[in-house]
Figure 1: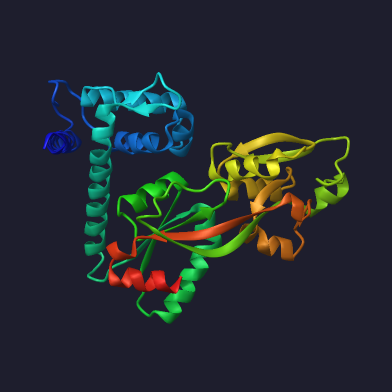
Figure 2: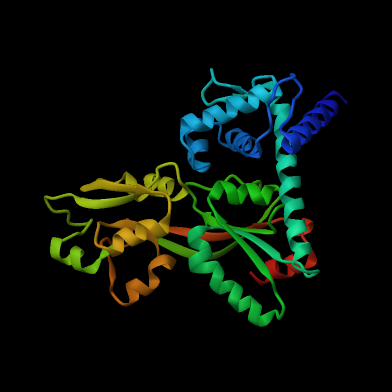
Length: 325
């Protein structure tokens, strides 16, 4: 019963502070910021401040301040920073399920209210990585809407960590993300079923003009390094490249780093260098030869577009869509 009481007290004070931002349990003005709870869940999952801050898309110093603010609100340390990797303290272990539950309930309640405001018929809720949403899911939804009249969907396009958080919190029905043997999302497959939908090669490409004029070829490197547009190392695709093709000897110079495929693609299209891009994001450009590969099969790796859901926990309409994937 002790843990149950602790959970109740934490949830109660979280609710009071989140709603009012007024005096908390220590008699201080210490309103709860919902982002702190999401930050804490991310840190508990990664056990790494650098990776967690990258996933949350804020600087490490700002992320650390937010974790300290949460600890100040709770009144106890939640993280042991003296170990590597960092570990949750006993208070952190007890508080984690409460944080996840509060975020999940708030997200679900907000979505339920929004859906009710739009009518009685339910939206099927997806979360997906930006590039999958643009280059894969949109077309799949169009096909399903032709075969399922009246189908209504809502897609949340965001980072991998946010998409996973939404699925774990029950705020979406189905998650679509990349899966790779060397770097896989932290999703409990004892709870969530996985469907592998399509293979999406990650290939090195460059604008045709500069690639030909300057002889950009990974297999026959010249004396001058090739300008390289890279992914943020802590991002999913950044880790895939680093753990596979990125381990090979490369005569390249990194001139730009970003987490978004679409942003890097724009730089590639303007002739700013080469990048590893998912084939689904550049299929048209490869077909019309605007972009060209600058390396053969040995310089590519295969991503899998995978879907995750808990079929037993979603509505029948969402299960029907899950079955169509």
